[in-house]
Length: 390
Ligand SMILES: Cc1ncc(COP(=O)(O)O)c(C=O)c1O
Image (cartoon, rainbow, N blue to C red; front, side, top):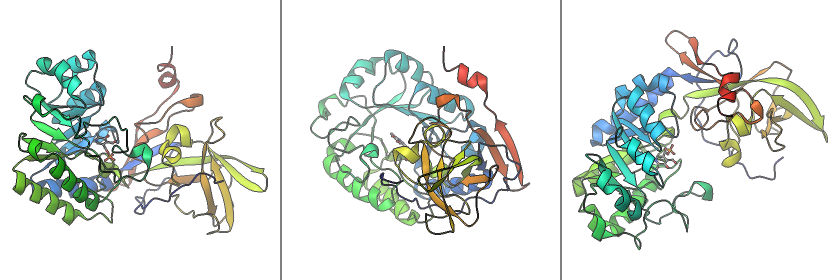
């Protein structure tokens, strides 16, 4: 390959986990790395007075919610199911935002959440009388793009996400206590700084009428090159200037660099002089962002094509011709049964995976660095496939 343009992500070295006995495929999440990320986020909260929520759309491994709850203020949900999981398994603040709600969604959400953010004034008007004691906010769209990939840019022209300046109904703000903007994806605090300047400029009058602002997600706070001091300064400055409560709701920042996907080589084939390894995992089913972003995940001990002596294209076990993870090179020949470890596979994987072709979902395991033990906390089988169908 590759006609598609892939980018190679910046990732820290994956956690040191002995995967020799791990059954594959499996996502293995490292408790030490998770605590490390959460401690950084906890420190941001303590120094700025903001509250940080885990966006469950990015990472919803509820087995570790008790650990998450030691550090963070709660969760951000995109649906009643996520809200319920957050309420039942974490039990702290639950906030919800979705591009639109049905009547049934709202009826369920009001029993589960502390905050609901609407995406339009028509939805707000439709549901405002049913919201009871829930704090309600409006998502705004500052029309300031920072995300280079259109698929992930909420501020692209014609976006359905958030109310633009032109459409904003200041005359219908009564009863709204907050504003929400989500404009970033895997970005630094410089991008937040530029965005916030635009938000404050375009929605100055509205900011004076609310009590809280949610800065959304997409803040890569726990990535090694993220400027945390700058974030702290931005939030402190905003709070001093505006006197408002601030929420952040990252998903990736909680789970980045905390886990790996371990897979095995099932077969080796050749086509047009290219060596191809077929794995017991799949880009489309188990790591869909590889195709959607697209990007080439880091593999422990492997390099880009040409870096090592033996080049391989790695493919998944579904029928999709494009179920290809990427082209790599290895210092030695691959053999059937070899284990390959994909780095940074905790977020947007287990929340997004599918059973396409009936392929088994990867097990979910937890590695405790204190004891060097791996506990398989969930195995998936035929019932998980069958129960999604009828
Ligand atoms: C409204 C909203 N909040 C939070 C997030 C979490 O973003 P991330 O996981 O990139 O931090 C997203 C991601 O799409 C989102 O749409």
